[in-house]
Structures are given as C-alpha cells and as structure tokens.
Image (cartoon, rainbow, N blue to C red; front, top):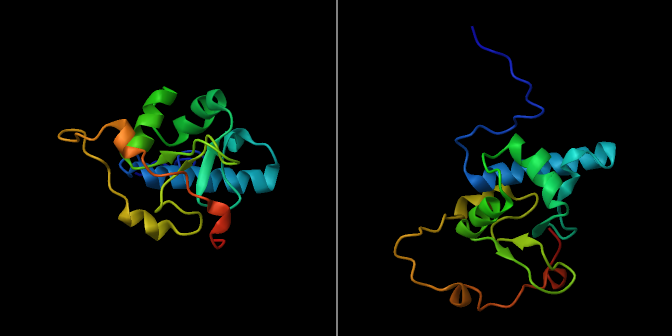
Length: 144
C-alpha cells in the first residue's frame, strides 16, 4: 500500500539536485504570488527579467520556504550551496543582493542541465579571483 502525500508542500524529492529544487521553489513562489498575493513563499522571487532571483526576507525564507525543499537550517549553508553551484551575488545596481547563474533562467529549466557543482578539494582560486567579472546588466539583454 502506498502512502498519499500532500504534494502542495513537498514538491521535490530529497534526491533532486539543488538547482532543480530551487527552480521548483521559485516556480511555486511565482504561482502562489500570482494567485494569493503575499503567501508564505513570497520571501523569494524571480526578478522581472527572469535571469536572477532575490531573497526578500531571509528569516521568513529559512522558516517557511526552505523546509519545503531543502535540509539547510541556516542561511549561510544555503548561500554556500548557491556558491558551490556557481550562482553569483549581484553587488551593485538595481538588482543588488540578488543571485544569478547564466544557466538558471525563468522558463528555461533545460538550461540547468549545464550547471555543475564546484568541487571543494583542489580548488585553489581565491574568492577575489572568482569574482573578477562585473555584475551583468540583465536589462540590456533580450527578455526571456
């Protein structure tokens, strides 16, 4: 006999990779926000251009949204996973504080297949070397 689970909250299996879970969380947040205007997962959202996302309320995000998809209990652990998967934090401009990855795009989940988790051992690059590129200007790019 199989157990029936409420799929509205446990959307992704625990074995799914981090980017897939994050994409599902953002999809859920978008759907709920469109239907209920201000639901619990409104603490995270895609930016209008769909090339980055922002965590609006870290406390609410960690207490409400993250437990639906992830095992992390601390925001620093979540940020570490973002960094290990190649996401970069935008440091200036209108999108400051948001996170992006060139293969993490709203409406294009197949692009995530190109994402690779960074191995920790043997990675001799410093944080400064990894962040040599300027923040991207998503508003000069064609819409998704």
